[in-house]
Length: 146
Image (cartoon, rainbow, N blue to C red; front, side, top):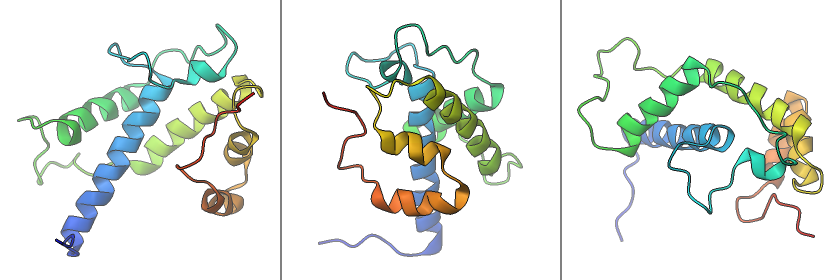
């Protein structure tokens, strides 16, 4: 069996790619792309009909979605060069924009469609988030099944 490399540049690439893919997933969850599939899960699925209307996507999130598509999702000539001063991801700004969308989402989501754990996580003080995340799992559903 082949082991994954452990040098820091490789690990950094893994973190950046993981961050980018999950960021794009969240952006697409809140702002479905034109090629949305029938089985894609969207924010509007957790709200009563017509409730989820997030307004226009910010230029920051538009650029981030496009950048993930170009730098991680596809092999392209439009990747940023290592010397490009804009190559570093502005994580605090991107997290801030996603956090605003999350807060708006849980205000509009139906308690009959979204698990209470998600409401708790999004509304938790920063000191509690890590505790709640430790109890969360991608192997369990965040959808209320009735």
